[in-house]
Length: 81
Image (cartoon, rainbow, N blue to C red):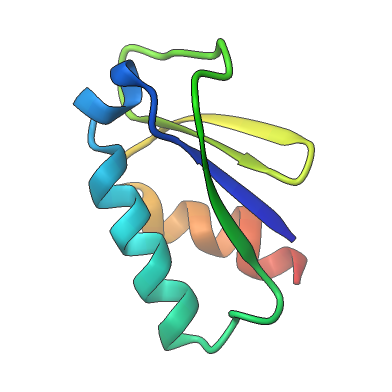
């Protein structure tokens, strides 16, 4: 699975650094390094008023925040592994 977190200027201002750190920690804690490739990306053109844009394989999700991250990870990543 390839997970790309937008680190473009808009998402950076909305907390992409925090989301990257949360994603790295969760992947490490669950020992998923061999199953998930984590990468940064620049603007995907899906900017949202709230949160960060994340692409999981070919699917794009917008509005991921520190608060919504745990649910996002379970629903869109963990359940698909």
